[in-house]
Length: 290
Image (cartoon, rainbow, N blue to C red; front, side):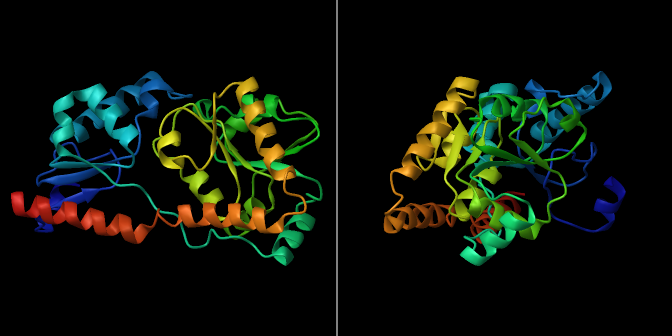
């Protein structure tokens, strides 16, 4: 890679992940999404963890500039590698795809029938890795509700499911908006997130969110979700609170529609166009400096 970069006659390169070539021959901008592996190695062995920390340190210290996907991630970088690193960090939130939008009633009926979800359910999308805290969500979900886990990976085999747990591990991307639109709420019990895009995707579909008070989630949700302790009691209380809010408006379609519209409007603040504009500003600044 260093040879390819040198031969390309570039002035600046943007590496959108921490795995920057160790001997990068030109100034580079790096995007750091999170430092989760510092705290939750999951099943990574010693060699993989050591390589990760070496590459992350290389990326942080040698970069001309760092893009962090949240203020939480920026603060984590400073806490780990020194406050002085903050001088070269810009926070740029990610965006949500335009594919995530409220589904029509016909689309919701079709998706419920296809996945046999004709009773009330709550939903989670994401991996089942250690920091995602999925087992706690399974334990916390009220028995009268279906819990739909759109997940996959080898960690799923370790989950202790209950009779109301449904695991969907082969869901097409185009089905997600209708599934989210049909759910009573989306629950994000994670112990640490660098950004937390699934919560914004749910809001973009008009789906209420119950989220953990850890990592970037309070920052990203910004008052538009029920924020809870990521424990069985905390998650259970959040779900019950959201169900109470939903049930308080059975004959108030205007109220329910207003809530959905507010969530959709908030999610629109997270656009890839905005992220691209802010990233281009970083490029211009670095090209001027270097």
